[in-house]
Amino acid sequence: MFRPRTLQGRYARTAYLFLLPAILFFAAFFYLPIGNVVATGFRTGPMADQWAGLDNYGQALSDPAVRHSFLVTAGFAVMVVAGSIVIGLALAMAIDQPLRGRVLFRVLLLVPYLTSVAIVGLLWRNILDPELGVLNRVLGAMGLPGQTWLNTAPLLTIAAVTLWQSVGYTMVLFLAGLQGIPETYHEAAKIDGADAWRRFWRITLPLLAPTTLFVSVMAVISGLQAFGQAYIITGGGPGDATDLSVFHIFNVAFRTRDFGYSSAQSVLLLIVIVAFTLVQLRAGRRGEVTY
Amino acid sequence: MRRPLLYTLLGLACLVTVLPLLYMVSLSLQTEAETLAADAVLWPDAPQWGNYAELFARAPFGDFIVNSLVVAGCITLAHLLFDPLVGYVFAKFRFPLRNTLFVALLATLMVPFFVRMIPLYVLMANLGWLDTYQGLITPFLMDAFGIFLMRQFIQPIPDDLISAARIDGASELRIYRSVILPQTRPALAVLGLFTFVFQWNEFLWPLVATSTPEMRTIPVGLTLFNQEYFTLWHLTAAGSVILFVPTAVLFVLTQRYFVRGIALTGLK
Image 1 (cartoon, each protein chain N blue to C red):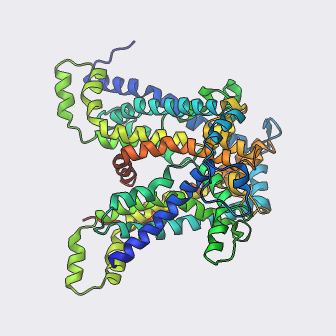
Image 2 (cartoon, each protein chain N blue to C red; image 1 turned 90 degrees about the vertical axis):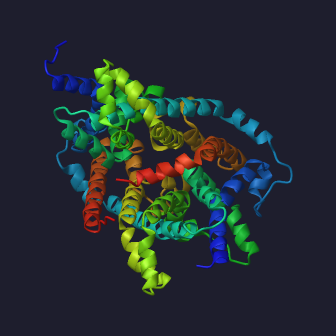
Image 3 (tube, rainbow over the protein chains, first blue to last red; image 1 turned 180 degrees about the horizontal axis):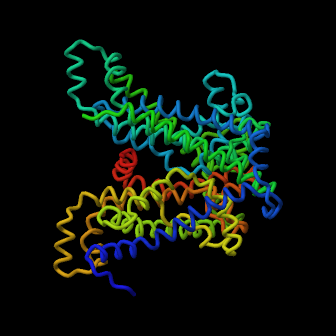
């Protein structure tokens, strides 16, 4: 093996030696698959071995089912983002007060975050079942009419179930953000006579912008790639009302066995996600604050 | 806001998060008739602990548990082995193409798993690794997030410590093991915890990459069990409890680390 003569050369050699497993891993399990998904998107046939040029992409862009699943997914992501910010921030502000049992509240609110999407899906499918679900019994006992939300508002319902699982995580992020705002800002505003409402809009919210940005980026990314909710709870239905994109791609790939067409759709969805992330981050850079 | 109102609000929110999980436990102890009653049963008259035994008789649930432990365990070990090493290199070494490689690494953060799903499936099929442990494990051996976390944690460690060890004649591997690694313990705890919980709960890849029931992990085995026996809610709930308990115990034991870990993910 060659021996570098300079000290720098020796450090560089050590660095690459240490990096070698990682370089091989990311090449084989990230960059090679990404290259392959793009390449497969240009092919067709049961073995995805015939050149199809841009046919798959063109077909995906004009396929009403694909367009519908994109819209469904976008709607789902918007609901999850809005819910994450509003509920997460409200819970964080409530728990940020000097209360007894804060740690316990925090633990209990965070518990659903530990559950697998398998639990979330199966449990809520049972609870929401119009025939045998416990929710209708509880509603009935309170004198409220029974629900069939998975039929009447399926997308909103699976978004709510997703929030049930994830909002504790958002709350902890907002809590960290709130605790990073110097107390002096609020005190100064109080002395100037600003009420709580004004302080929220003029101090808390603007200074929390980086956290809100992070939360919304994470929620968009995870919302756009939700899968289990459709696979387990609704099967994409009723009809195709909850045909989330990744669920749609999964079906085209592994039920219809059309790897070319499903790969092209994956690439399109990836482009949407990357574009969204970059736009959000760029918009966020303008609102950054330093203390 | 007034205190009583705050307590009420937070109390209600906690009921919403916790009651469904308690109901899951209740469901797992009901008789089949109780689970199918027109009026849902809140708590069973006589808890049916035998449901758990019946679950193991109906599905290879023991295999699911072993598979989940092996897969999540191996992936967690790999992260603990590689993420700090790679993070250390990016934090403390200067070498050609360093920035290029680091950007290439961070770029993978923007690649969601579904993008890799189809090509990985084809790759694993070609390797003959579908329905094997190596097929379930290898796609997740490292990730940019863990490496980034470790780099951020290692960066503040003074360079002088490393130089001093070099002057004393310590080998580079020795420096990493004896000087760097011991100082990263809190970050390693967070990394290990998160990796294990996420992999324990992972759903999509084990669904795609396994075909025989004996190779399924708990989340997938349970979901497909429910598709097959969709009226046996008491058994599905029992399986859910088994899936949930390890993460819940881990969480209760380490909730401080957990909360700190989440807050860390929000840092840039």
